Length: 339
Image (tube, rainbow, N blue to C red; front, side, top):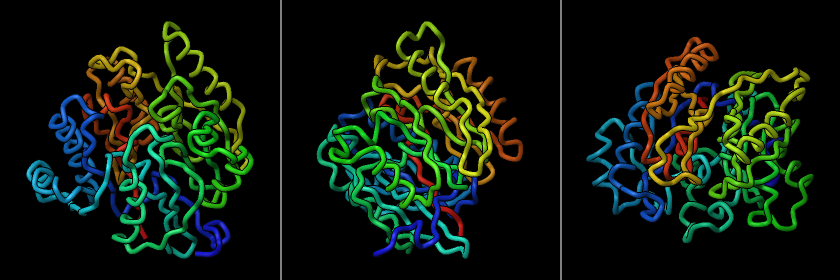
């Protein structure tokens, strides 16, 4: 397509807008996981929790199809695809809609979070495979970007981080202004709010979906850490400070809802990589699928989510064998909006 999504009238809808289905990618890179079977079981648990509320399709390598089918059962659709890894949020497309109900997809370049893993050509092609299966046309960008690096409110506001897309391991030669302009054009945005991100989070270089997420127009959930977290606490505070007093694309002052981190989670020895973020949850049709860490914070966050999403069921799912890979429930899911 010659014109940009924005020029064609497309915009990425908010995650809470109705979904046609969810897309996921079956675990396939052994070096990421301590116990591949345990990770696959956690993926299956998340998939079944979502499939209670909406259809779900799992991308799977042909050689993994039988094992995936045996674990997932018959209620999850499978799509054969030569993927390299299992993070659908990042390798998948950002689905778009227009005012007339038409759909499209924004496809960014993918280089495995700055070349941290190889190969990644299968994942770089996954977004087009998903859009082809969904029969949705694609807009392609030259920007290296991942879905976990952005959050949108569906009304023109985009959140992203300084530590991620402007990183030289992704987009050398792109200025921040150029990146901002490209995000607006590809996602139908009117305003980009830049957060500092997290330079200590070396797996994704500080994706925003482990820091902050929209819960409603003008409402942002943001992660908080205890003061004894040291440098990580200071980073969290810097992101909170960057959000305070901000207005969205519609001119509303943004309300912040503080979400505690699962700081005391058992990381299985993966302290630097383990995803402790409750913000990294997934809003699907009639539900919010949130991580469960077997901590008192599970109940605290569940109550906060129930207040934020009173018409949705809050569904906790234990994900210890996913979190060791550096991501959570949001990282492994990608929503396809309903027509």
